Image 1 (cartoon, rainbow, N blue to C red):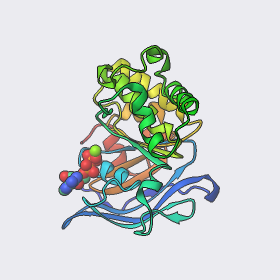
Image 2: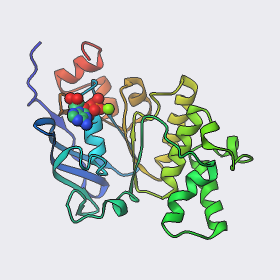
Image 3: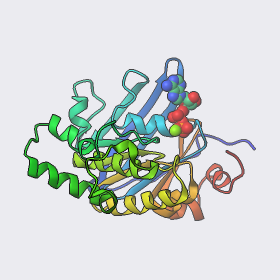
Length: 264
Ligand SMILES: Nc1ncnc2c1ncn2[C@@H]1O[C@H](COP(=O)(O)OP(=O)(O)O)[C@@H](O)[C@H]1O
Ligand SMILES: [Mg+2]
C-alpha cells in the first residue's frame, strides 16, 4: 500500500481555545530529520494524545514543547505560548518550564523522601514557609491521587513506593509547580493495568486545571482519556482531530489503516 504523506487533516482551533501552538516545527538529529512541518494547536483544559508507531516522532515532538531536546536535537520553527515564541533563544528555559512541565516514561523520583520530592523545586524557587510547603505537598498529592496512600508516611523514601505510586509522585512533583501545561511521555507504559487505570483516572481529573498533552502507544488509552488525538507517521503529522473522529471516522486512509491495526 502506497500512502501519500502529503494527505493530511489538521483541525484548527479558535484563538481563545489555544493553550499552545506549534508553527512549522522541523526537528533534526544531525542530518536526520525526525519531524516535518509540525503545525498543531492544543486546547486548554483538554487532553490531547499523540499516537503513532514507534519511531514516528511523538517523543521528539513532545520534548521540543518545553525544550527537553535542547542540545540533542535542532528544533526549527516556533512554539507559541501566551503569544510568546518559547523556542526563541531569548527565552529562559528554566523559567518557561515552570509553566510547561514534563512527566517521563519511567518514574524518576529523587532518592529522597516523598515530602522532599515535592518540596525540592519549590524551595529552589524561594518558597520557604513550612506551612505553605505542607499545604502544597497535600494538594499536589491529592490531585495526583496519591495522598490517601502516603499521608502517614511522607518521610519515607520515594524509592520504597511501587512503580505506579512513584509515577503518581512524579505527577504530584510536576503539578506542585502549578504549571499551565503538563507533557507526559507514555507515563503508564512501565506500569501494570491497575496502576495504569489509576494514572488514567488521575489525568482525567487533572484536566480540570491543566492542559495535558500525552504520548501513548496504547490506542485504547488514547480513546479512553483524550479529547483530541494526533496521529504521527514517519515524522509527519497525518491527522489531528477530535478523538472520536480519529477512531470512528478518520479522514485519511493512513490513519484508518493504523488504527485498525493494518501496520505499526
Ligand atoms: N537522541 C536521538 N538521536 C538521534 N536520533 C534520535 C534520537 N531520538 C530519537 N531519534 C530518532 O528520531 C526518530 C523519532 O523518534 P522518537 O521521537 O523517539 O519516536 P517515538 O517517540 O514516536 O517512538 C526515530 O527515527 C529515532 O530513531
Ligand atoms: Mg517515544
